[in-house]
Image 1: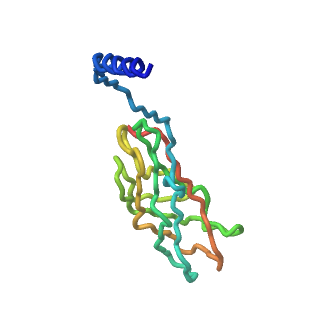
Image 2: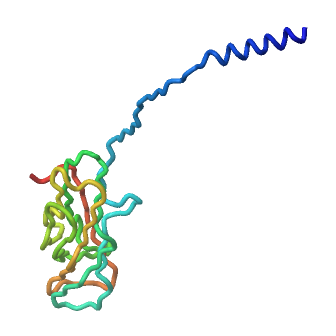
Length: 185
């Protein structure tokens, strides 16, 4: 019985060894995919942020014409994540007079001498007052302006005309910054 089992094992081994199995190389092509949905266009950076505020400092009262230098709190940032390269434009307007809640500085003007940054058009010599319409600050034509765009405001001045009565108080005016997804042709 022992010999029969050994012969069966030997014959089985020979049978397996006689039938050599060859494996063929096989490849398959697949795709990696990604899809993006349309984002937004906004004033501010990817981590938040706002349009710049402008600080004109603290000054002693006088009755002559006055020009006070202003400092922007940050660059003006436009973030265009729409993924369409449609272009855009940014405008600014002063919606209210400088006021302390009771008294207003009627006739005052904010002047922005120039704006630096990468755009198809940059505003210059902008004069803001509630009686003026919105001014175009920056434009990105079609196929430009995608991603993060920073603009520096330069030579900012608050002009108060001669004879304008000011009170020992803090005054504020509202500036409205608007980005529109309609480029200027």
